[in-house]
Length: 173
Image (tube, rainbow, N blue to C red; front, top):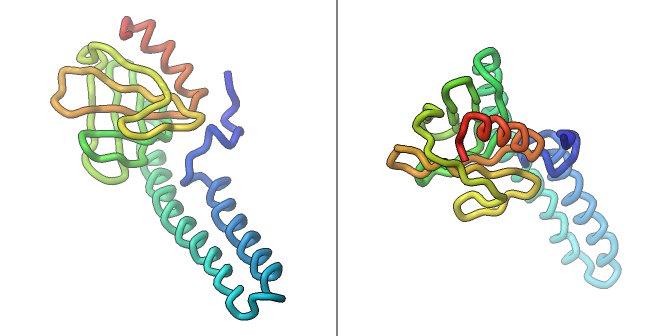
């Protein structure tokens, strides 16, 4: 089983990525400013706006990460939980997937929760693509169930491998 310590197993709202969002633009902006100042003068200071871009990413994904952590703590004792990128209808949102013995619950940070009985699931497609986006280092599941709206989620590869086995043992392919 893969380790969840790998960067590919993390989401942009996790602490490792948040630190990168602050560090990389700062280093690049300062380095570019210092390197171009001798011949560009005050115009080289525009490279420092990269720091602002990193701060915006940090604040945006940090807020999403706090909401995901709140959801995880609220659902802690109920089921096996995994942070995920969810697709419920037309809404794509970070959130939490709760796998229970008889149902799967998708809990996004925006929009409505969706519970699906595992008996309702006719088939589950697996891959690296959610509708419209590639998910690096993650396993995407697309549910074909007796519901009207598209349902899909992506979880870290190590969690996805374990859940794939669970779905197969329940006869869902």
